[in-house]
Image (cartoon, rainbow, N blue to C red; front, top):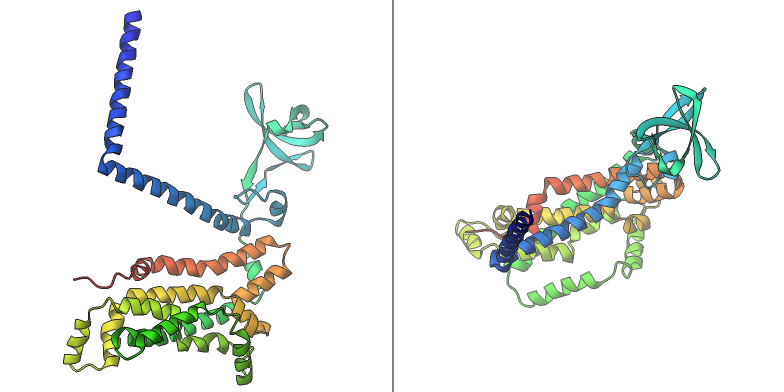
Length: 367
């Protein structure tokens, strides 16, 4: 008997040694280090993704909850409601109780001092069992309130705010793409004295805070009669900005000059080269700056708050903030409007993710 035990233990030690040698060979090799690094990187990214998604999931969950649950069971991610059973004409909460190794569904009819409760079988309410409440599990059922969304939309001029936001976003986006493409094309394709100095001067405007130029710009728009209209949010986009010009210029410079020369031989002028050679090649970069502008204009709160005074001209960002102030106790409605506001940027990113990624890394053209 002792010999058998010794043999089994020697075989186990041998198997453990083989496994450890195999792991050591994998980790010790170059491919092993790469595998381990990829595994650690994936784990870190997955953990970060979970942390980022928790507030988003909580927002969606809260938007589907009943106000009573938000006050009494706010930590639960599921919109739920306690299961109830009728006992002697009164609705009582159901619990999953354990007695003598058996599991039952009993209703709690009364709390007793000492953390105890009186539980009864709804089918036989005459038999009362006194059990510790904290040792029992309360039962819930899924309770989704889709009506929170139409109620939230009707509580504010949502469609008016949405229309204003779409006008500011897409008209401004068109102006930004038009002006920034022209300026970036000039900086990347033409050669002139002091051109690099002008480009550095343009980039230096990025360091100028918006608050510094707020008062002069406001006075200008006021004298033009544009205050309390959407024009102060749209017209400036037609005069380019340093950030998007820089991104487009860097991408344009990756496109070979030989394509321009070939187009010139065919008789194309500079504007035709931009329209038929540069812009088709720069589609990833154009999509990237368009997405950046969409996110900026869609979420912009500061400038609409300054320039828009009338409620009918507000954008969604300003309207949501005011809605939050007026309906502080109605958390479910605030979360419902927030979910509606965050859906368009998410859809835009998912549908243009591949092109957006190419534009961010400035891959240029191949071959």
